[in-house]
Image (cartoon, rainbow, N blue to C red; front, side, top):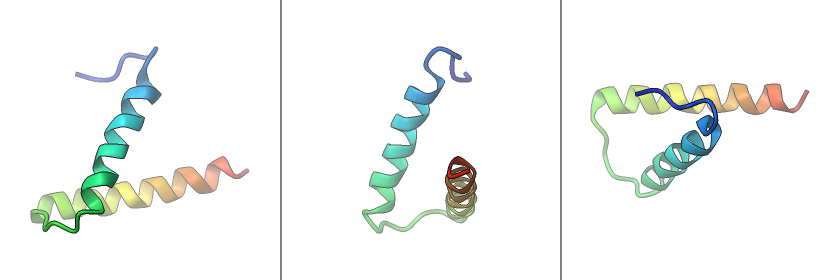
Length: 53
């Protein structure tokens, strides 16, 4: 189920924090998870760059 508009950023923040916490463990990911992680990092960079405008 998608995020409800009234808590979209709160839910996404928690999910992103969970991903970051796991990323820091250094545990190996499946190939599909590795690709998704790379895509997520690219998106985060894009968001950060746009937010600086």
